[in-house]
Image (cartoon, rainbow, N blue to C red; front, side, top):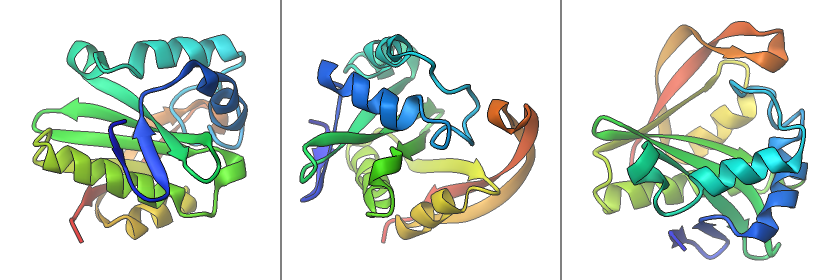
Length: 176
């Protein structure tokens, strides 16, 4: 376990997480709409990603890692948080699988992530970005204490949105 609240645990993956994460998030067209990659087409892609990036050595070896978001009441992995080292800050990305949305898990996972990274002196700031049309992510970020800092045009390419280059809103975590 990396950190936890009463409702959520952030941890590295377990083999039993692969199939549900693929089904509800990495392979789900709606969940991957605003990502800079195509959805996974087979569970092996999700398995390889987690084997490489969701282990304690990931950050030291690659400068990034993935934490599983487990909802205690569900007894299941409900999403992922990706943490990427960037100078003296950390960039976080997040996603909650479609069956688990609307329960506040994304905002809570973001708060847990940011507080952990800052408390453990992994970074002096925690920031992120989201597509300008991804209102659900913008709401989760605001609820988690992230504040809008700037808009950047044509920041990333979105394969599921005709491969067009997309604008994003940048956010920074401000402890509440």
